[in-house]
Length: 214
Image (tube, rainbow, N blue to C red; front, side, top):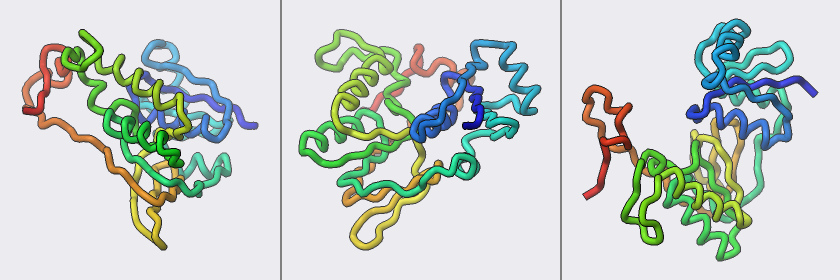
């Protein structure tokens, strides 16, 4: 088995996708958070020549970013999955809720998304969700995730690149090269708020600067 090291940061979606890929295929790896360790960050740059993450070291080979094609070649992983009743694209509040309802109807369901929580993760304080006097978006989405994972629902951190229809089923291909086949598809990709383009907008989003649908 090759020696695998992943340099990552906590807020990097492609880092999560690399780790999810390795875990899905049973590959043991060492994870190093370069956002919390300056020496590790310097080590990563020295080894790879890159300052961005993720960086994956497989024995002596350096894989930059989420290079699904190369990871599949290295580990010889299968690209074709089983037939599902429902494929849900997106794991925000809508996608996770849809997954729970599908599971209650005993449908073989898979949820594919780049992250879990979607735009709700950017909400610093939610005060109008019944059952909670005040809850952060991150806390609420963790509750959603716990409920989904308690059932028989598959969740994959990946990005859908193509979606088509063939012989009465839907076929989705992801950034990792995995192929998902489903009888039905629920698109719950969410949306992105319109930005104002003002100074420090990203810095204060959810911390004094908020977005609301009216």
